Picture (cartoon, rainbow, N blue to C red):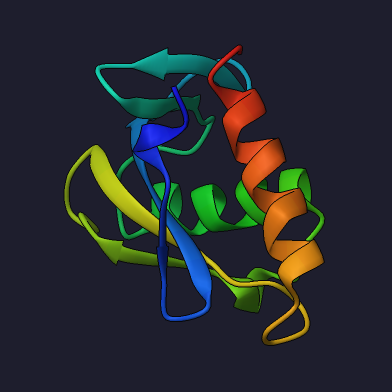
Length: 106
């Protein structure tokens, strides 16, 4: 299960599958090796991307500046990079990994 998270450049990268125009913002589990996230925002004008960053930042207890879409800005499948608040913080990185692994349970 934990194989979907990679460590890169002092942060963690993981795949996300976004379902826009949902009735709620929620993590619904792991599907085909990606964290499946429902978002209320439509996929128009970057609204779903902004909501994805905002939702993940809040869920992970990070500032929005610590969450970045590395690839997939125009599609539903994305690669997300999260960085700990304090650069080089192994404890924070371990905490983030644990929370992201918990997403797989929905």
